[in-house]
Image 1 (cartoon, rainbow, N blue to C red):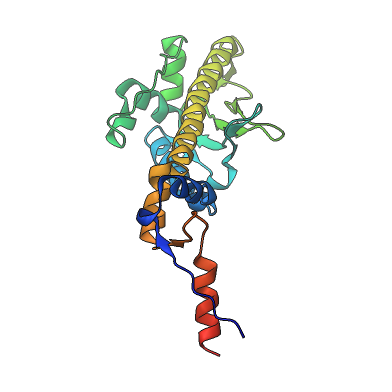
Image 2: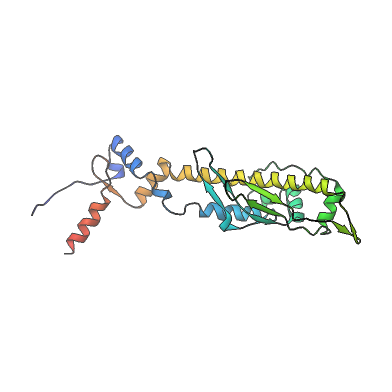
Length: 224
């Protein structure tokens, strides 16, 4: 039988190079779980103020430093509410400091009125692309009937409205991706990792190697 005595140190007791090694070892400490869930919930709540009901299970992303990375989401849209929310910047009731550069819908006011009063029976959707990141939109209008007559002459205006909805959705999608990227960068920063190490009272060898497994091993063997 051999007895080994080993000195262990808290993070703050380590030398500079040992601290750097410890931080590198635990670089993924704060992102080895569903760290994005709060960002998803925040995005869903923000969009609700715009009349956009995001389907949580549809949100997807990949990041953050490779070509092809991005995000996407699917949602149903209350178009009249969205038009009002954009005009009044209603999302600021939830996020006062958040700025969005939404444009004014470039369509005839009469068409906007038809949308606002529900004359156009639309079921607008934002749809996450299936094979890549990004979104597409669909107004859900196949025909326009008023007073028993079919009006095909406003479809050009409706195409503009759908393009406007797509621009709104793309702005929101970029916001989603940037929020996720910012949170990931914070969680993997030296500051956040150090805080987690100290909170969990992790111990290290003098050269910065993690010694938590030794603590657990000692606990198990001591019980025998």
